[in-house]
Image (cartoon, rainbow, N blue to C red; front, top):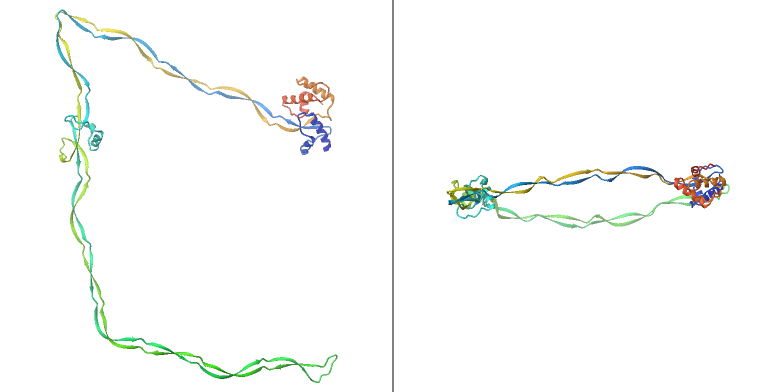
Length: 467
């Protein structure tokens, strides 16, 4: 099919597709993608809608949790007898005989306290003093009441040692042995031998010498002779002539011996004199002086001063080393208060009437069971959700469509009736593709998920229309 034929068919198909806004020329730009059509067939590029499928999924609506219930405490009321008045006696007739008695009541319990002394109102030992005593060897926990401990300062210990101390280091004493000389007669050079250079003038002589003025040469000259003229020759004779060199004798004065110099020796001058000559050179004599030492007595520390504690009755350490710090463990006895009261010494002479103790019954609320926490697990809640999942995206495809080439009023009327039966208003059933029919076709395609873009063969098949 030619491009003109496709252009005609496409124009007809576009007329049927109300939603299309693409011209035939624009579609023909993609002729390489056009389907292999047969004469009389129409194709349109239709929209293939995206495909979806329905899936169900369990979705967590509410996470698992816990509900806490508090079980309150349980109480019960019980009756208890409470002493209101103690039992007593009442003497009748003969008055009782009374006496005063004292009774000790404990006011303060017995206690142990570390003091600085057991005498007088000594202050309590400070924590620092107790720590010092502990570090000084006192077992505070093992001490018994009445024990006292003194602190002693043991001075540093020294011992006397003797030591050889260098007073003067070993050295050397240098003595100089003077040089020895003697007088001798000796020839002394007064003036050294020398040389004097004297000029010798040059010597000349007269000589004669031949000097080349012009060197030897050859030239061509005409010659003469008896020559027979042959052919066209001129008969002229040319000879190569040698001309000898030319010399000139000159007289000149030349140097026979050049100017020179000669050395004249001047002998040395000597004088006899008395000379003091060294017989023996001065010498250095080293005498060793030994080092000198002195025996020194010195006091060397053996141990540092330290503080120690010991029990006050111990005689291990001298009293002079005491620092004055002292701790004593004092036992403070329990304090009692003397209560004086009047008691019956003898009862009345008559009879003793016993007065019973009085009790009162009271209701007391007692705990039977404490409050408790009860944890109740609340399970997670899920719901089934149906969702629409896309399977494929929307795309464009060439599909066979109904157009003027393969369209008849009868087919259009059948399409209109099928649309109306499906619930879509195509307008009057007149076999004409109007705007109402095209709107009904588009709406039908959208609802059914069919490719949109004209009266496709898929749409006709879905409507049950055969061509």
